[in-house]
Image 1 (cartoon, rainbow, N blue to C red):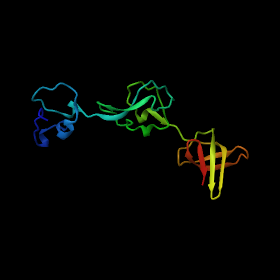
Image 2 (cartoon, one colour):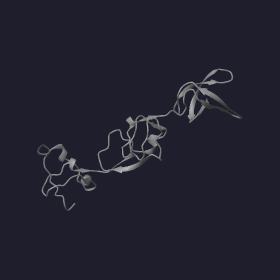
Image 3 (cartoon, rainbow, N blue to C red):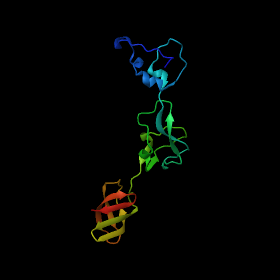
Length: 172
């Protein structure tokens, strides 16, 4: 704070980049050498932001998890679609090759459905005093809450069920 002299100037006499709250600058990191008396702009400093960063090479199609990524403070402007919380990448796979040090973005990932078409899944039917569990074949992909078609493998009958969890659907 002792290194900065605050000036109140009318908005018409300043650039947009020169308008900021002093408290923002005081918690930031300066990005270049500044001469005494120079006017500080938003481009001269950066605040740390949290974002998911790749820690190991991830090939296209591989899952993203705690073994190959971490939540880290970044001293650079992060992309607008950067992933900022680990919960945002649950069941995510890479759409392209991701290199260590890259900030993970939503455009880099594809979310894997909780139930995958043409795979065996568990069907539950829970009624008062009656519970039924059986294996069925998912006909379509589905995320939690989606109603999808499943096929009873013994009778061939197609049933609509709601996705409840990974590999689990239920009749309601």
